Length: 352
Image 1 (spheres, one colour):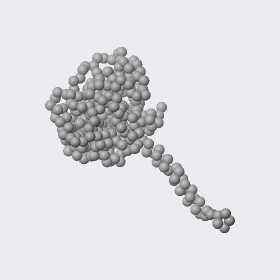
Image 2: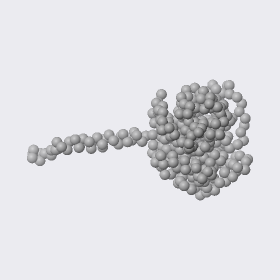
Image 3: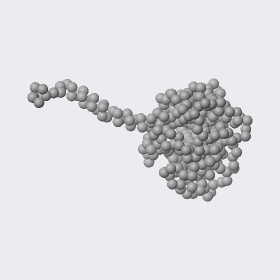
Image 4: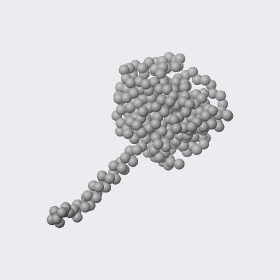
């Protein structure tokens, strides 16, 4: 091409072109890296459960809905977490069992928030009027909506996550895909736990895996069912984050379970005057390798020796307001952080 027609870049345009090129090549990669996070909200529903998981793709799983009444308090708190996560609907709602502090908030939440599917263990198994009432209210609220009864080994389809049902309706999984069950040395010295005829023993429990990060939530599964799950062999392996079972009640949290899953961090979703028992607190606190035990409330029925430091409590005794929650942000590398929204302080847990 003759020199007269050869295109020439103006010297003044070169810096601009370099900036545009950088934006085209580098920024999308940075944005993708930034968004590759799993966010978990342990929401304060005053001694019930409401745990919201939001995947890197923005798909969501809510585990339980807290209590009914209280002018929609628990639905308000779930919606506040949803707003923080930037979502306007729940893709999957898993009800662990049909006790009021887990399923009671469902009718109010259903009025406010679009929900893609409802997951539960099937019929109510408990012979009590209050549980029958709450189960009936749940069925009425979800009438005509997509419902799936889950069983051990089932998956909950959330893009970017592996979410496996470990326990449901009193049964449990024998092996988690990709994990070879290992002998559990804690079982030999484990005490005998009583049979539990309540809905607690029917709890759905899940294991969520995001790359190398693993989160365990067993609802209110009680001791005998914990032992059946992890003895004589542990099919779960170890986890990074453990939601302390049954709000930290001493009907759950056997050493055979807690020591076997070997959590780095635990969150206890206790209330100020509900659960957070000294025995359960001590078992979790003493678990080998545990770095921190977070609590949604000061356990006011316990003592100072069996409460975590105030920096690890979302709603300490004497706080002006309740409703602070924990926000966990996890990376597929296995690293994660926990933020106490009361204090705004974040602690990082690098991948080991």
